[in-house]
Image (cartoon, rainbow over all chains, first blue to last red):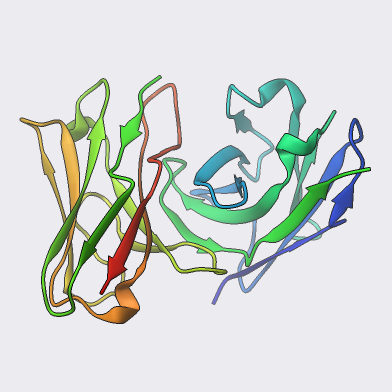
Length: 120
Length: 111
């Protein structure tokens, strides 16, 4: 059974960089065919896809966030990470990592989510 | 870019059937698979339908998905409603330029 677990600071100051890591267990992040995604959900709102990475390092980002987002992968640790720069209060959200089968939004495994609050 | 539009909320009584629609703004709904996710309060989403009409193992057959090219929409139908079905439901699809697009979500109330 594949499990994903987000980790990182729950509080980030405005203008700083939000950094989260997703640790994958029960399966290899290097398995072909899967895209490792970040998705967020503003309080009381819907789902917003941030981007994904393939184990080879190829990435694709949501155009609305592309200028501030970096997703990276560490296959040796079976982890992938999110960095979101120049954050504001509008980036306060629950951040989920998830496994996407084929890169078209079919998410079969999700992390539990982690709330990140942007505040001074 | 295309959008997926869902009703903000729907409600129905236990034992009844409810259908949630998801209308694609541009491009053919039939050209790219649609997934449906259920999200209960405080929990991560889970898949109830993938590839238009496929149910993951463990999802009861009360859940079904379909697409209608004439209205360019997808639908999630839940029959024999149970109180445990009360949740938010999101449709999701994609195209060559947009790998992941979510609908705005529909709050299902079972009263």
